[in-house]
Image (tube, rainbow, N blue to C red; front, side, top):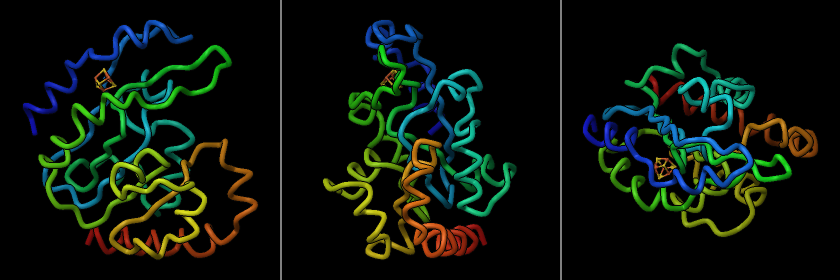
Amino acid sequence: MERLTQDIRACRICADRFTQTATGHAPRPVVWARPGARILVAGQAPGARVHESGRPFTDPSGDRLRDWMGIDDQTFYDRDRLAIVPMAFCFPGYNAKGSDLPPPPVCARTWRGKMMDALGQVRLRILVGAYAMRWHLGWKGRVDDAVRNWRDHAPATFVLPHPSWRNTAWLKRNPFFEAEVVPALRLAVKEALQ
Ligand code: SF4
């Protein structure tokens, strides 16, 4: 894992791709994993704030995700307990309209299998958004449908919408998520950490 982490941190495969985005940034892989972690958080890709901080989920999405999971910052960032492995390790940038670009597929093709092998078995997988659901479950449908059918995968795997502010309206339209999924997720997280 140590060698793999070094290799990913040195990765510059997407350098040309990123210079052509509206942000024109350089790759900065954010790797947050150690073997033996009990919980895998499989996210989408770092955002602009995480690109700056070098720590995953140091943004309002992270605050919301920690709230859903029922854990504090200290627990969330304890690499011996949580591995945070997005579908791309770098911020993909914004397009000309200022929207987030998707995670470059080359990242998962290059690194994800190796990272999952190095991580080993976890007690709980938390899949955030469509890209993680596709890779880990082969899910080809809508995130909305996957989340509605969350019991198909729980309690070993939870499928979540992205905790971004962009999904606040969805959360308001779908109170079952806060009423049913969040309490079950908190219990699964608590049990996985015990
Ligand atoms: S997104 Fe992944 S493949 Fe692309 S430069 Fe970053 S670590 Fe490398």
